[in-house]
Length: 115
Image (cartoon, rainbow, N blue to C red):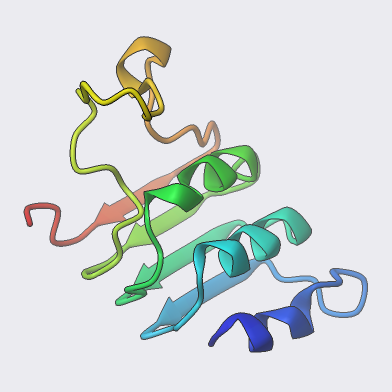
């Protein structure tokens, strides 16, 4: 899946998505953000989505109210490498108390956490 294909699902009226499993997708951060804004996902799996980065984490948090299951597989860099960053351009994970905010999450699987 790439951004062009993801645009087919830009309206949740015609095809509402509840589960999204992406493997080897060429989806960009913006493409995932659009899907997250449009659909109320309960399950999300990201495997080998090499173009996705930490830049989509805030969109994931904003859309995670209904999320029950999240899998972040190998070669998907959605989670930060560290939560203690001294850079001036960072989201203050440590000060706000969370990296991932998904109040209904029942299942979390993170593969290949060590890089």
